[in-house]
Length: 387
Image (tube, rainbow, N blue to C red):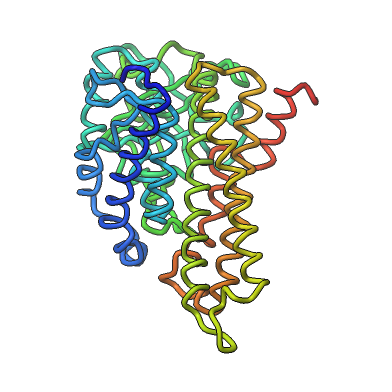
């Protein structure tokens, strides 16, 4: 996509948000309660999102995508989360947003051609597998190994909390290819989902009920060597770079979910009658709604600033630190708005089927995914020279 001036960007954003809003309101929101009960959503939704160009937004045209600046991609995330209001759907439907970038940056061209177009068309599903049962946020301590045997790597180990882990056709896998400890021995390997020796176990969760989240086990899985992404030992740097984009997306999603809580709480407060008048006529309720909106506006303004700086090519230590702290700011905004929304809805806010109830259960995974609050603060402290 050619560089857009301010007016062109505003028009493109408005059109995109309208498209995403219609899609979310008609094809996601009416079904999320039933999908949560079923523990999955239809695989056909991937194709529908692809037909609208949503899966390919921000990806190269040569592979079936539509190049787009962060300002548009994050606007899509925010609108999708606000009007679809199901983290389970968004997490799995867009798991390629963390699975594909390392493939695009590091894979051989023939591998890119094999993998990327089908994922962006909604025909295949991509996932990222980094976290391990014994490692958590300590990526440099991962223990899954990949040893070279001729033209193959043999993979042994386990991964946990993998979004789209049950359905994934392609798994971007973090492995240790050297005996050395720490980050220097880590590589990325693309593993076909039908590989012999790969087993998957579905995990039950507090929220994101329709998103498949899996524990993966690799027992002597043989992967062709040409699926190595980049060179051996380059994985840790690629993983860290990938996290910046993921955290921006999580921040945008958190703001969208906070807006969804605000929308439902405001609508309820206007129509709910208490003591002979609408709930919103009570000052304490109005003030709760104002507090929600205040936090949403502040977080959204910060997101807009960081998106603009990313589109200008900034990747300074200050920018990285702000991405980490924005992720905390946005998820704390979400926590506040989900809690306030449930409180305003009262007993109805405790009932399954309301937006605030669902999001209230899903808040914690957003504060953990992409790096916990504690890890975000630690990274920011290092980038800002505090430590």
